[in-house]
Amino acid sequence: MGVLMWEKLLPRSVPAMSRPSYRRELGAVGGFSVAAAMLEAGVVGVLAKLVFEVSDLGFATIAASQMFANLTSLVWTRVGRGRRKGPLMSVLMAAVCVVVGTVAVLPTSGWGPAALVALVVLGRSLLAGMLATRSVVWRANYRKDQRAKISGRLVGVTSVVIVVVPLVAYALLDWRAELFRVIYPVAAVVGLAGAACVWGLRVRRERHLLDHDRGVASSKEPPALSKSGRPHTARTILVEDHDFRRYMFWQFIAGCANMMGEVAITLTIIEMAREAGTAEFTASVLLNTTITTLGVVVTIPLWARLIDRVHIFEFRAVHGALWVVAQLGNYLAVVYGGLWWIALPRAVQGVMFGGGRLAWQIGHNEFADRRLAGQYMGIHQTLTGVRGMVAPFVAVVLLTGFGTV
Picture 1 (cartoon, rainbow, N blue to C red):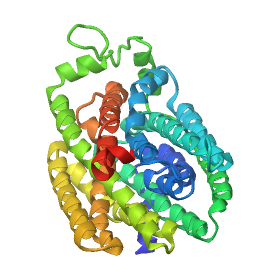
Picture 2 (cartoon, one colour):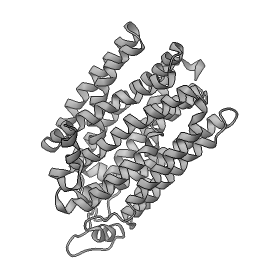
Picture 3 (cartoon, rainbow, N blue to C red):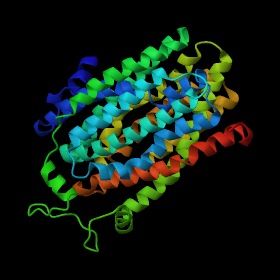
Picture 4 (cartoon, rainbow, N blue to C red):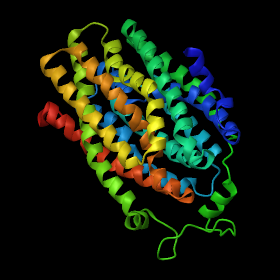
């Protein structure tokens, strides 16, 4: 079974025209994900609470950063216009790695906790730019009937790294908490190696995409214009694309609930692990990140097959039902069970995350013209950011009360 899975990851398993891009991206995610994993809310949030002792408001900000950093996506869309996508991705990845390495020099008291929160927000904002750029690459380099399968493999590799690296790293912190000053720089260096892999990445028909970005018409591919005859903006896309607007509306509602539930259970797990007093770093990361990410690794190939066959509306209906089951399980485990009972609904949540990560990164392509893929992704990211500015803080207030925030 392991050999078969390895064979599926090899470049020769994808169509010939996609291999050069896939080869570079495979190397990139293998290295860069080590650094990015250390900025996952369920990972760095544990460090923030147990070592830096950030406030509940600071914790909510870390949890929310993964979402509200997406508010920068339209800025990144503008930054990416007229620029080659491979070098841009590489620079953004390298900047994230610098942020990760900087965590190691922060004091754990005084201004340190606030600086940690600010670094996480900065890192997640840079990561949002990388994701927006990567969506353009995936839209251009991978055919629709292969896109979910190929991107699913890349997301799967990232997920494996997120399973293994934080669990090993944070198990060391149970032995000696100060080891974060070694772990974070090592993760940053490995991440820089991954960032170097995509510097020379080529995008199919990139010259036409760059011409479109610069407003230069092409006889082979005229610019995509709004009904007014002018280049599209976020507003014109939402006004004119009724199906995409409807998709974004319901995603906003579902996403708010999802964020609130995830922040609440993450903070609850950390506090319950601290009260248990044994291997609190390992238990927190295991329940917050490892189990859910294992669900992603195991199920993402199945989700990829489904998303290749059905419209994104149908996909999200099935996917959303699982979220409801997971949240009900979280409630029952916390109220009637105990710390380790939470593992069961977290496993269900992991299955849901598998579909969510894939759909979030490529779902907008169901609606977008290839020339507008970056703008569609930018809208999606921005609306994710808007709900991220509100939902996590509401969750912390509901969980802990106004007086403790």
